Image (cartoon, rainbow, N blue to C red; front, top):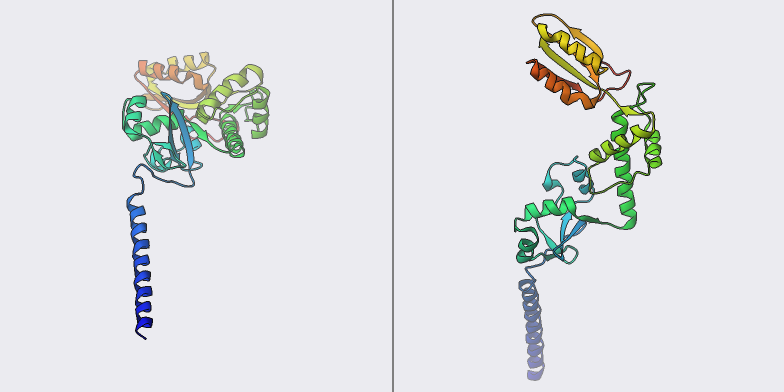
Length: 275
C-alpha cells in the first residue's frame, strides 16, 4: 500500500514538473521572439533597391494604384504601417544605418513615400495584368472625358478610345499617374486621328471700357461665346476655348484688371451651360 501511494506521488510530481516546463518554454519563446521582426499578412509589397540594399514597404491592396493615379491622397489609407522592411514576408525590419546610407535620413514616412513613388509593386503575373488592365481603362476614361470628335463635337465611346490607344501602341506605366498618362495619350492621338481636346468653359469679367478687347481676343483664339452680360459697370462673357489657352486668358484679364472663373474644365456638345 505504501509503495502504491509513493508511486502515485511520483507520477503527480512528474506531471506537475512537465506542465511547469512547458509553461516556462512557452514564456521563454515569447520573451526571445526577435524584436527586429514584424509580420504582416494580406499586403501588397513595394520594393526598391538602393545602394545595393533591398527595401520594402507593406501597403493595402488596391490602394497603390489609387495613390499613384492621384485618386487617394491620404498616405495612411495606403500604408499598412510607416515601417521600412528588408523583407516584408519574413517580417524583417530594415536597419537604421542602411536607411541613413541609402536615403540620407531615418525618417520612415519620408522613406516610405519615396519607395511608394519609385518602387516596384510585387504582384503575381495574373494580378499584375489585372492591375495594368484596370489602369488602362482608367486612362481611357480620362481621355474620353477630355476629348471630342471635332466634327460632331461629341466624345468618342470608351471602346473607340481604347482601340485608338492600342493603335498607337500605348503601354501603361504603373509608376506614373493615370492623369499624366492620359494627357500624353491625347497629345499622341491628336496627331493621327480626328480628335481634339474638348473646350474649357470660362467666364471673363472686365470693366466696360475693356470689354471690346476681350471679345477681340476671343475672336482671335476662335473662342465660342455662350452668353454675355453687359449690365452694370463690369461686363462678362462666358465662352468656350481650347484648354491650352487658359493661361493666356488669365494673363489677359489680369492685365485688364478683371477676373477669370473656370465654369467647366471640359465641355461636350449638348451639355447644358452652367452659368
